Amino acid sequence: MNLIITPRVSEKAYAQAGTLDTYVFIVPLSSNKIEVKKAVEQEYEVTVIAVNIVNQNGKPKQSYRKGGRTMPGNRSDSKKAYVRIKAGQSIPVFAAQEQESK
Image 1 (cartoon, one colour):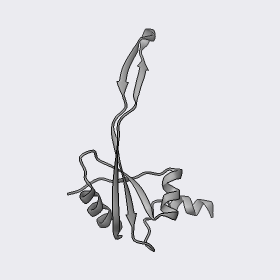
Image 2: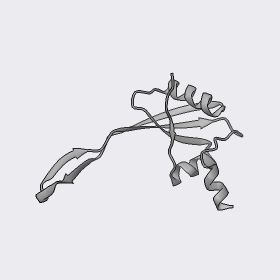
Image 3: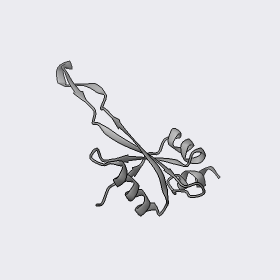
Image 4: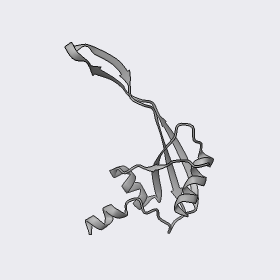
């Protein structure tokens, strides 16, 4: 089971990591909470307390073709996992940003 998890880097995710010990990851649509927990614990060697998952439907968008014709379409669906870890532990997701600010 090699689940590919990608850290989501945003201002909100950075604030949650600093205050709530919660990190945000983009995960595959077919994953569940148990798989995400095992993947984070294995990859970052931390203790996971809780995992919450959010399914986001893709937004409807229009694209324009030659001649000004429009084609309706949707962006891709996505899934985010909010992973809360044990207090005192950290994941070096924002380490590069913290070094730049110092």
